[in-house]
Length: 168
Image (cartoon, rainbow, N blue to C red; front, side, top):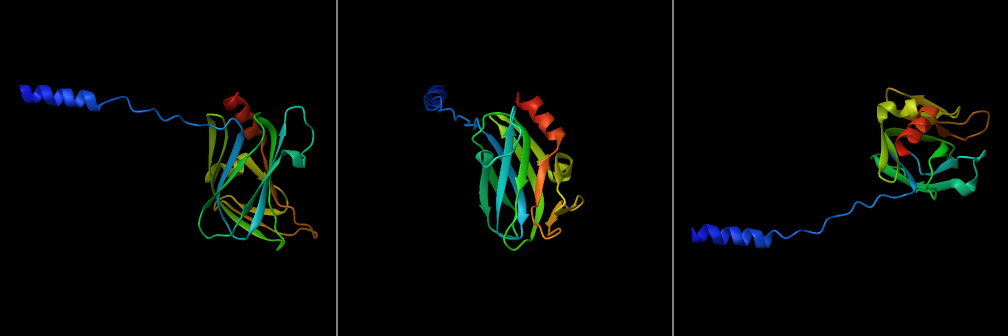
């Protein structure tokens, strides 16, 4: 009996409250793209907030990306704490070619997060005329059109509406 009492006392003493780990969620809008990128590039995320009409460089985050046959995560954190009314992912290098295989992506604001799987990417983002997108393989191949090379993906209204609903 004494042995049980000592074991219980030891258990009570050693089971102090451990410090709780706080989750540190950014209050800024973040966009995370998980993809295989075939050529070195600079990816830019442009965002427009309520009341603004045009995309500007003041509302842009750029990330240098190195080519890799492995999936990599490209993170953008904006200066904005607002839900954007437009999102535009722009890329394009001096070689005027790019190929991406999208694995997934997410958009978050504070503790709220929207995960977008590879098979839903095309439903949430529309490629422009410089991108040939294979929805089955989640592959975007960018190329030159009439001498220009300006590939980008624009967030569809369904994603903007979902952010307004879930982040508010």
